[in-house]
Amino acid sequence: MKIKRRKTRTVTVGNVRIGSEYPVSIQSMTNTDTKDISSTAGQIKVLEDAGCELVRLAIKDEEAAKAIGQIKKETTIPLIADIHFDYKLALSSIKYGADKIRINPGNISKTNELDEIISLASEKGIPLRIGVNSGSLPQGVSAGSDLASSMVDSLLRYLEYFQKKNFNDIVLSLKASGVPATVKAYREISEKCDYPLHLGVTAAGSPHSGIVKSSIGIGALLLDGIGDTIRVSLTGDPEREVETAKRILASTLMRSFGPEVIACPTCGRCQIDLISLVEDLEKKINSRKFSSEKALVIAIMGCEVNGPGEAKEADIGIAFGKDRGAIFKKGKIVKTVQAKDAIKELLDLIDKEMCSD
Image 1 (tube, helix red, strand yellow):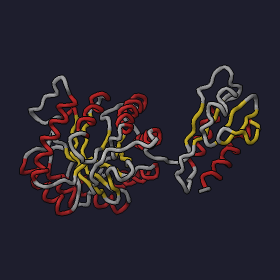
Image 2 (image 1 turned 60 degrees about the vertical axis):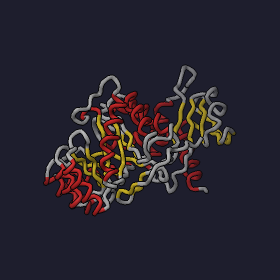
Image 3 (image 1 turned 60 degrees about the horizontal axis):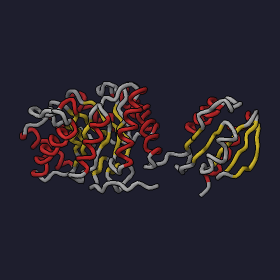
């Protein structure tokens, strides 16, 4: 089932285009000190290898802004400067080569400061992300009993100034730490403008809770056709953010990143160590570099109940009995194999399918 996406304008960030005419892109943010050029560039390369397409850097001072220029020489994906409080850091980041600037209406709002940012961004062709955050609403704005609507109203008022200045090279975000408020805010803003939307649940927490909150919030919006770029915010290794983002996009059928493994939950009928087999197959698939990102579904089932019948829509699968498994393609059994040979047999079939047209 193909989801019909909300129609938006296109914003170009470096070599990545954000908008409804292009794939939903994956973002993350470094957690290194941006002034530490070697560590920051190294982490960006790891993120890029994991599938990150845009990366944000915390710019806390002039030295961090200056580091952007050197980091760009050592990396290839677009760099987004995250600016709070000091508008001059946005100007410096643009001068040193940032591909996009994120500003927060909650702490940069003086018109003379915005004028300078707009002027330089226009001159250099650099887009802005206006990012409203529930924890830092602009002065005088009360969240009240309806946080989502307060966020939307705040963003729209702020956005008016940019529109008066004829600056529309903009991506919007409205993030709360709660899923319902986040989803409501994005649904409301999606009906009021055609700017691309950056999705995320802010301060989602540790991977245990953050993955769940982000998957529900971001996933619900994507299934509504809302969202053009996403970041999963987790406390910990940002590489985990990218992995989770890819799974969310694949699960909502927004994008494919190669074979997907599905498996039954196991029960008393299962006579093999299915958990280890699934983990082994996923590990081997993730370590491979396929020339295609074909959306291949691989099913591993613990017994005949969950075999070709329940998994008949899978491209390739295996249903186990005791020590043996029946391999099937599109619901039809093609051969039986020893359990110890199952992963190798499946990988051989996967390789053949991924190489075929």
